[in-house]
Length: 373
Image 1 (cartoon, rainbow, N blue to C red):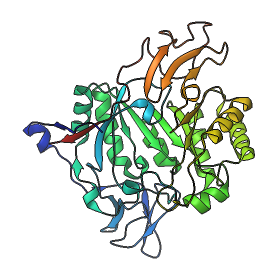
Image 2: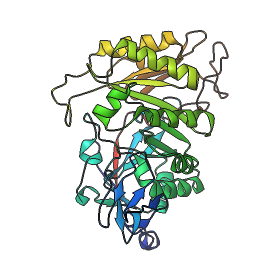
Image 3: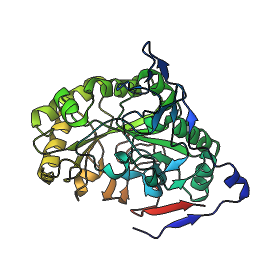
Image 4: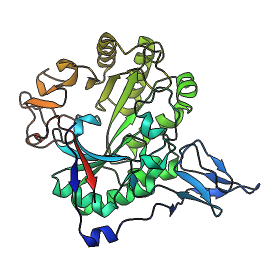
């Protein structure tokens, strides 16, 4: 990890620092006096002083409030490929941050120290939306990312950050599990330019037993993103040995993606490592990722990637028509670049789905932590 970069703001920016607790919109009163949160399908029913499963939304004075507005578990400049997004401004830096809590209960969570945190000390850093947008612009970031934990649970803060970022010419990226109700989903993604959605498996058993949620709600989000939102998005599935890596399940998932989203939505298969409440499960063998990539490609998905392993073929972007290597990737470092200014293969002219420029960014694999003052 690189040394922490301390970002100093003047008096005006510091005076604009937000309050931690802000009112929210998506909730309603129940006949028994409780308040129901309507942000996600979990529909937490709260009495005064109680928090939802996500931890950050709570019932105060008969209303649901967000208790962590402007607070973060940390800020960091990452390569955009780390989200992972391989077809959105490749090679560019993104200012990334998250808060605490999550509205799912995944036993395999790879960011459990943040997403499962119930300690406010985790949220040691703070920045207003305007501070974040100014810092991203001055640090040379092309986008800001709401990541590490799911932004739908802090959507008021995320939306304000996205609005401020747009005023600075900065794009907004959401890394999300897509577990959100229709109305907040529409408002949230109306402010988002690109997203990576965790499709955690392709069985209701897996979602219910391992994640504490339901598959159909996530599929609804994917269909919405494809057909109703102007958002570039990619999909990630973390493959866990013996849980969601069966070849038949991978084929069924791939067919659903092609039938409902088309052939051009990139799919990332990433390797699991033992963590949180699934430490007894072994790491994902590289062969499982390679096999799953082959199945998805044979099913018709044009761009399929392997992640969390060193695999130059599975990490690179290839032309679906002529087979040319369009973007060479060695982990997060880019090499050969064969995409023209119009986003087409330089060899055969086939259009490559995504958001590309004439040349890639040069951020590379660096990770630069940032602290605000």
